[in-house]
Length: 123
Image (cartoon, rainbow, N blue to C red; front, top):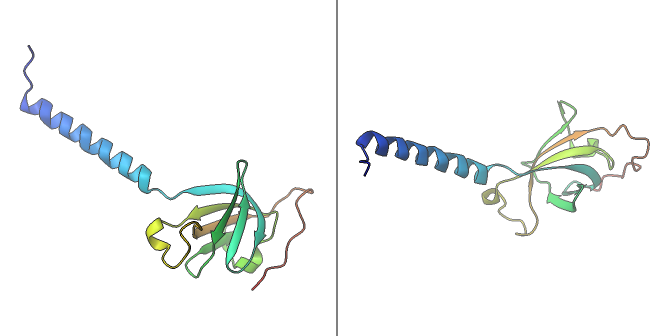
């Protein structure tokens, strides 16, 4: 029978700790959604992904960029492609539980001639 040494216990404890760190980071990572903007207003964005249609709340904490430059919600149009990063659940205070908050919206102008016409932004 093989004897477990203190060095073996230390190695197992380190491995278990690293695994715990990796799993925790994966669970706490921001969820990012890639899609096309269907509609946008000053308070919400509707994003169409290959699998579904998602709605996010836009608030004063939402960071918005167009290309590589800071932007305003009024700069974004339907048809633009976007990466929407969901805010952590703990920062969703004051919103309906079923409506996630957009922490970041990183948009790019659509170059497709088939892109829908831009929608007017509702204040």
